[in-house]
Length: 117
Image 1: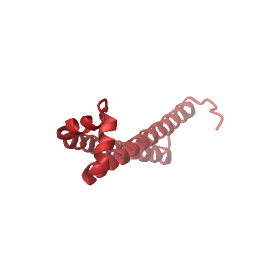
Image 2: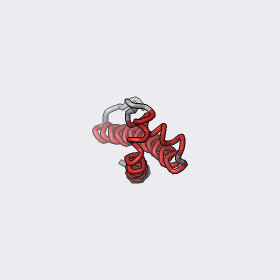
Image 3: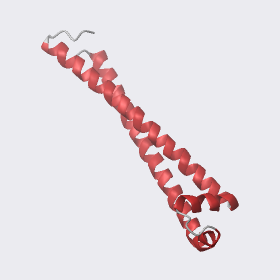
């Protein structure tokens, strides 16, 4: 393995680590927004269920969002951060694929096999 290949692989591994940290941050933010939203919702559940008897949690959240700006903001943050961490999941999978591919190429080069690249 030459130095340039090793450097590129190291950069990909570093990028993967950075994305994992961003992923963790987004998961924490989404969870915190959800928890805060549920805490805001809980004292209002009886009032909401008086209006709609069989309201599930998502329906109750939607109904709370109709009247509460704080609930709307928390719901928006939850959705935004969930989308962010799901996107980061896909990016991390792609980065892992690149790292695995580079490792395979280096293995074949080391053993003297033709890897077709």
